[in-house]
Amino acid sequence: MDFNAEDASIFESALSDDSSRPKVYIETYGCQMNVNDSEVVASILIANGYAITSNINEADVILINTCSIRENAETRVFGRIDLFGQVKKSKPSVLVGVLGCMAERLKDQLLEEKKVVDLVVGPDAYRELPVLLRAAEDGQKGINVLLSREETYADISPVRLDKNGVSAFVSIMRGCNNMCSYCVVPYTRGAERSRDPHTIVREVQELVDAGYREVTLLGQNVNSYHWEEQKGLVKQKISFSDLLEMVALVDPRLRVRFSTSHPKDLTNEVLYTMAMYENICNHIHLPVQSGSTRILQLMNRKYTREDYLDRIKAIRSIIPDCSISTDIIAGFCTETEVDHDMTLSIMREVGFDFAYMFKYSERPNTKAARQLKDDVPEEVKTRRLMEIIELQGKLSEQSKKNDVGKRFEVLIEGESKKSKDEFFGRTSQNKVVVFPKENHKIGEFVFVEVTDCTPATLIGHIVEE
Ligand code: 5AD
Ligand code: SF4
Image 1 (cartoon, rainbow, N blue to C red):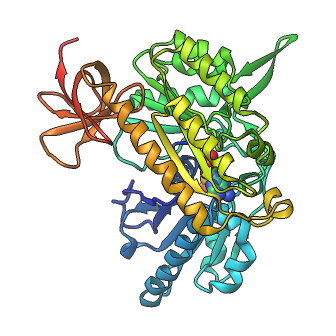
Image 2: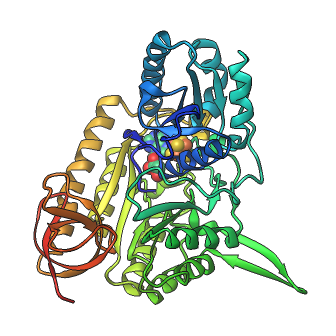
């Protein structure tokens, strides 16, 4: 998943002009799924008489949607909760709620140790928020961390909080059944369930009608999406590639992305669907985690180094101009220098265009925490991570250099942070390009010739098609 657990995105306001409504401030940590969940939460609250604000000081309710994936993600959230305590001191009527993965994992600790917390609500219980908020207003602690086998919030159209009006996330499934030994997600987000494809297509159509130009279909493991429905006497099965096709057909001018793919489930069928539809972007996020088959086995990833490389070969042959990004964990239990070297070598062999790189962080109660020893010393983990980051820096730079001199269709997403005279957008391959505005607008597609690059960005100018 395009992911930065360490980065909070604080949403801008939606519907905050009605002054009679109690105001809710939502802060989001973690993956894109959490970002989308906050939009579902906003939609539920707005339908129940609340308004959303981006100003914490005018909030009547402060919600923090949290991530448990690594220890430092949780540490940061604890820091924020303490800060909310200070806000509450100056305005005691404010309600503070913890949502998401930490709510699920740490409910008791949050309620016992953090007196400021009035509400603890897990990822499958957001429909209960209005009821829990009312109870909290009456001085009761509101808690619901029940996980569900069915909840997909299928009927809820998320309120888009990010204001860009160009690209949106659409959840197609929830939970995870993979049981990677290091990962807390199956415990915090529960079992995998797919969302009714007709509600997905309807939501995508609504986005198109509202002027959106790009959707990213989200799930922990999108390739295991499946839906069955009775069509007369026959049972119809809808796979991820079927769904991808249904979404691509909503509008040929809508870009379609998806994340995250699991190497064990990425079928050629999906690759052929990507190749067939121009509007499905040529980018695959395919977390490798490690280049050593022994470590992959301990991680319970269910593929070998060779299997992963086989998938890369398939991508390269079916979609020659596809970019590939990945996630890597440094210093998993028992990892030796040889294993680490295998991670570096698979990075070189694939030539990843981009990577999210992490130090292994033991999560309580996961299979790895129960059965394996977190035995790679901290300084070794740090050094290995630095080597991985350094190598990826070179690979990312090379990937950008390869684009210099080429032309790409780019979706204009916003104004460049550095200059008011420039836009930024992304190529189909998900690389950011900065270029002079000329007479164009956000949300338009333009052709850009790349003339230069920095390690992080392509630089170019608009050209005629
Ligand atoms: N420690 C470090 N990184 C982790 N990830 C998941 N769990 C852990 C953990 N316990 C990383 C994986 C995953 C990404 C979302 O986060 O690389 O793909
Ligand atoms: Fe973090 Fe995973 Fe929860 Fe997303 S699902 S917020 S990555 S723990």
